[in-house]
Image (cartoon, rainbow, N blue to C red; front, top):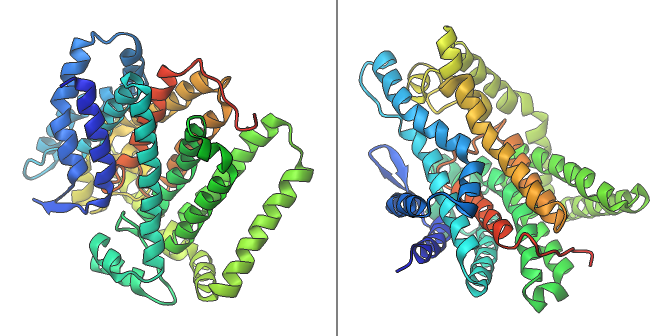
Length: 428
C-alpha cells in the first residue's frame, strides 16, 4: 500500500471522527482523531524522510515550520519546568494538541497534492457532506433532539443549557457552546471554499452555486445564534466586514449596491427572529447587556493572574509551562488564548505559534491571489476569524473539534500546490 493511500484513508477517518464523542482516559480527553494521528505519525515521518524534503513537501513543511520548532523546543523545556516548578513531575501533554494539528495538516495536504483528480473530487464531496451533517446536528439540537444533546454534552451543565426553553445554548458536536461557535466561524468560510472548488468540477454546483451559498450561510447563522456565543457573533460580524474590504472593494462594487443588500439581509433575519424566536432574541439581548459581568470581566481576571506569574526575564521569554500555570493560576487555562500561550510559553513560544497562521495567509496569497482571489479571501477570513475568536476562547488548544480547521487548511494547501496554474473565478 502506498503511503499516499494511508494518508487518504486517514483523512476520511479524521473527518468522520468529529462525530465520535471523546473518551476520558487518565484525565485526558481522547478521541478517534487522537488515536488516528498517533498511528499516522510514524508513516508521516517515514514519508518525509524518504521524500528527501523536496518540492511540494518542503513547501508544506516551511508553512508550519514555526510550529514544528515550537513543539521540538517546548517538549524538553516543559519537562524541565515541571521539575523546576511542580511538586511532582507532570509531562507537557498539552503539546500533543499542536503536534496532532501538524500531523493532520501535513497528511491531508500530501494526500490532496499527490492524489489523482477522482480521489480529490471524492474527498471534497465527502468534506462538503460532512460539514453539512455537522451543521445538521446543531439544527436538530435547536429543534429539541435530547438524544444528540446527551451524546455530545461535555458536562451536565452544557446539557442543561441545551435543554432550556428560554435560554437554550446548543453545542453541536463540540459539546461546548463557545467551542461550537468558534468552529462555526471557520465552517462558514471553509464552506464557501469547498462549494467554490466543487463548482469547478460538478455541473450541479455550478448551476445552483448561489443557492447553495445562501442555504449554507443560513445554516451557519442559525447555529451561531443557537450557540448563544457572543464572541462568535462579534467575530463573524468582524469577518464579514473584512470580507467586504478584501473582496468587494477589489471587484470595484460600490456601496450603492452592497450596503442596501446587507441592510435587507440583516433586516430579514431580525424580522424572522422577532416573529418566530422572540424568546431567543430576548436571551441574546440579555447576554450582550451582561457582557462585562460574565465574559470580558472574568477573562480579564484570568489574564492578570497569568501575567503575574511571569516575574523573571527567562519566564517572560519561555513562560512558566501549562502545568504550573494551571497549578497556581487558572485551573482550566486562561480563556483568552494569546495570553494563555504567552503565559505558558513566553515570548518565544508566542512568536512561533502565531507565525504559523501568518505563513498560511502568505502561502494562500502567493498561490491564489491571481488565479482564484476568492479562495484567498475566504481562507484568510477563516484564519483571522479563528484568531480573533481565540481572544475569548481556545483555537489551538481546542481538544474536541480543533482538527476540522487543520483538515481544511491541508485540503487547500495541497490543492494550491497541485493546481496552482488553474484559474477560475466565481464571477466568470
